[in-house]
Structure formats: C-alpha cells, structure tokens
Image 1 (tube, rainbow, N blue to C red):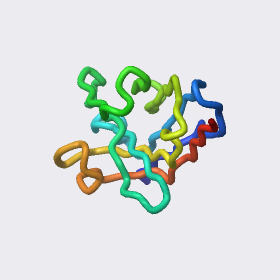
Image 2: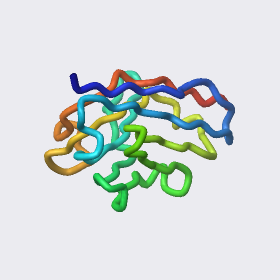
Image 3: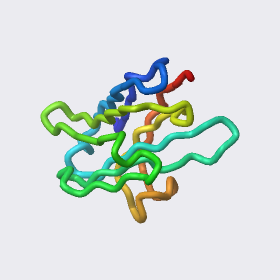
Length: 123
C-alpha cells in the first residue's frame, strides 16, 4: 500500500532548472519526514535534502545549498525538489524517501523508497 513515485526527471543544460515530484500513497505523507537522495552508477547513494513532517525544518547537503529547494504539499500528498543552476555533477538518479528512524543523511534509516528518476545535466 505504501508507495512513493518520482517524476520530473529529464535532460537539461548546465545552468537550467528542473522540478522533481514525489507522489505518496498509503497514508504516510503527513506523518513522516521526507527526503531526496541521489546516486551515480558505481557510487554510494548520497543525501541531498530532508524535510520534517511540517516542512518547517530542512537540512541541505552543502553541494546543493542555495540551488535546490524542498517543499511539500499535504493536500496533494506530494513532495517536490526544485533544482536551479544545475551542474553536470548533479547528474544522477534521484530518489524520494520517507519516514526516518535516525540521522537523515544515512540511507539505512529511511523506511520507504521510490524507484528513482533520472536527471542528466549536459555541459
């Protein structure tokens, strides 16, 4: 029943913008923290940004501060990642995750994951 589905990925030029969406089902959206991770083939999945249940508290990875913004909409059961000033190093599969049982930056503490959406930034 619990499901997270990402969308909005694609190919953009460096300096461009993209907004990712994560649709949640199963009655978890309003009761859990949410986060975005990303992963490049052959590398470890890394924390991008997390948000508390209300969205009042957020934590961004240093690499995306000032460029990415997380937001959530309880009415739509969705969480978003607005990505601006994209760089080639932002290229990765982006994953939505929910319900943390510990430190947000560790992927092992999150209970639910989406399948990911590919973001490719060209030079």
